[in-house]
Amino acid sequence: MIQISPSELEVMKVLWAHAPQTAADVAEQLAPDTGWSDRTVKTLLSRLVEKGALATESEGRRYLYTPLLEQGDYRTKAARQFVDKLFGGRAAPLVAHLAEKEGLTADDIAELEALIGELKDDR
Image (tube, rainbow, N blue to C red; front, side, top):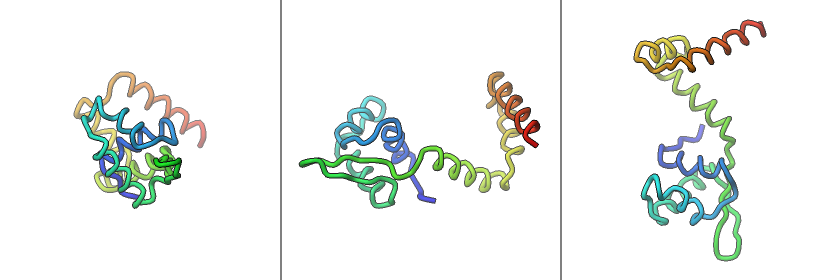
């Protein structure tokens, strides 16, 4: 799996929401929350291109960036890697940990109950 840093992930989120975009477009969207300059964003975009996470297409004197990774695929692989690394590949200890540390809201619990119900029905 392509390793994406937290900063690179912020860039990917912008492009997953709408692509293709120029570096200036991405920087404009990220600036209010991150304060990153155009140069910082261009560096992150270049890293993502080198890693194979983004494709570029020339449009005159500028480049358009498009994700090569699907957001859902990335989430699935990143979540699996996280659960494998910290919880021995098991989801139950992760949920128990969140419950113990008050990381689950009433809405989260209701969603988990519904999901478990669906999973039981499918088996």
